[in-house]
Length: 629
Image (tube, rainbow, N blue to C red; front, side, top):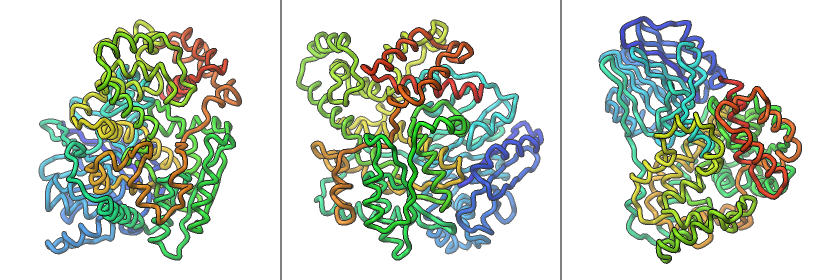
């Protein structure tokens, strides 16, 4: 786990070493154990190191024997020992015990297709002096970030936007399409960034830059259209257990202390249980976050698992004092980001880092095994009714009723009649878009945006961000299609961004065994009935874990990893929130109608409606503007 950056002047101009050093300095938190540079004429690579494997020999940038190939790399290659064995059989001689060296020789042997052989999380920059080619490569699921600026005669790249902004000639003009997307989803989706001049390399893509041009291609596709031939449940359980155990085992390779996040939910509990079995007599070091608000607190369940497996448990209670760390959180996030669970993730990472350098987490379980029970179950109900009810009734009767029915977002989803009726009047893709617009629905944006903002984005449709993925996956099963789009959008742009930025804020590496690509490919080939069985989410995963975890962990009601935003904004955080939203100097005034924001605020403070998400989204944008604009 590290931070990488670089400059490629493809007009032949020499690299500004001071600029490269400055870029590297902004990434110190990602790699506090050392730095390294490779600068030759018009190419410069920088690396900040968090030492995990081969503490002495794994320094980067690292080159081949004649120096014509150089690499900087953020992440871990979990199958590097297997790759090393294959390459040694072909005559390659290794000088280190690091996974980085396997990248170099894999490229020499197999070219750019070497990435197909990697099993891990990675953002790689590889320079080939023989062809004057710089390749940027991002892992399949998007666990590791990679941003770039492409000018007319140069390319800059880095693990974080703040490193690119060291170059003051890069414009900081806000991309209003990106802002519009943020206000729907609470994150800025790839390939956009909040700045017009900067872009994200999407997951599972390779960018190649040569003097004659720049190109991007996708190297991996998750096939969730072609469902495998039916197998017995026993066969699936055996195969799944083998893949999951292997994924955990591979992620235990480390030359530094290793532990786990333990929330008390199914996914993190399964990871901890499997770690304990594989680590034998060595106690797993676990870190758990709790809340005084019992609706959000799972600490008692984490304690059950910690006690069963005799882990070395550390706990921390989060309260509204969290606003003290908001400034630091905003700085580390780089872009506007509205998922408030970044706060407990920040704290649990800080706590874990006191004992270990690496942790395993249960991230990805909800997307892989259909764990969002309310949403996925309602998607099935809505799809069934769409097929049953005539379109005329859905669009001309139920839809208009939904338009006039009172908003009730404070209720659990199955009781939100307005959203349910509106979804029925739309097709599946549009209903999914509305469900994933956690912050501002299109009709809310109409009231929020100033006319200048509306005019600037009139040719942009936020739905297209999701629509492009719906076009790729045409599976008639709506649960599978929803999972696929979640895996391509919400997972890499929200969940994994939150985990990467908050853990790296404390120089902590997080590994996610459930997102092992071989495991996720296998589960993606299974019918959705093995994931969502009636009202039981993660059915096959829970079944697999029955001999390792008690039923009150596996089959209790899902809580999710979130914070009590609604009550915080009506209580301890109210003054801070009001000042942030309604200051006469607020950046929000440039883009938005403050009267509409005041209306949301009053309705939220009344307690009759819950507008915590949109208000928090606006707050986080304002705080980001104060830091970066």
